[in-house]
Length: 327
Image (tube, rainbow, N blue to C red):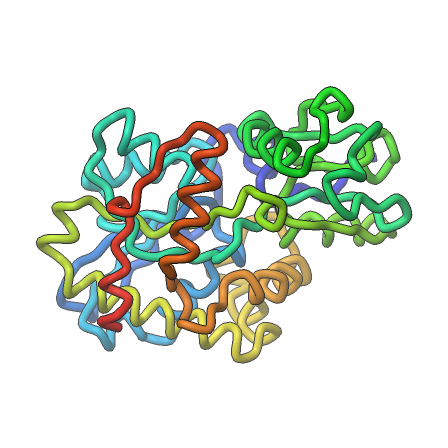
């Protein structure tokens, strides 16, 4: 059985590269705004970035006097490289790659906010054979992408689950083996894959790695130290407008995906039902009592501790939450 392509695999299997996409690659509000600012997304256009689409469409960046150039991502895009090449002023990144870029390569980056308070990556299983917590993986087969292997091993260690008691096999973001019962669980986006499973006539059960030790942000908002120094006021404006965009979307999660079906979501091969599911699933792990993008001292420390468990040394001075106080 071959399933509809999911968010992390459709480019890999249906396109040779980003150039083959019929996506709105770079949307700009340049006709109206005064201060140019470029933003690099972490992946191709789906509901992971719907708050920014809303902020553009509703004119929130324009109202702040910003000329935002939105750059979609993809499998060949490394957001940190886009910052270093000065092609973008802001990038959404994985903290697991940003911190090593600072420590190992000397990149002058600052993390000024986070989209996801909790990384949406987790363990996905079938509800008919649920893996409810790490210890349930003992004696089971877990499909894991190479990029997530270190964090999965950390989760197992923190949960006192012997690694040799879990059969870990490669995973390429296709839940077909899970649905067919050939494996017991996968490591994937809990905000997305359960929808694919449901389309195959089955229900999924999932939990986040975040809740079992690997407690990190996702889609961290990163800038260079130079941009922070020279464009601080514009960055605050971007944060304010972007927060308004997410608040607009979450005020009625069912409203926005259909509205942009033929613009931002055109050509992705994903259904609007999928985007609706994802938007609703994201709400709980993006929103914060202190406002979207917030980074509390406690949560920053959780990130530092979690990264330390997988050998990545983060420090508090890599984060700058002061701009959030100016929104």
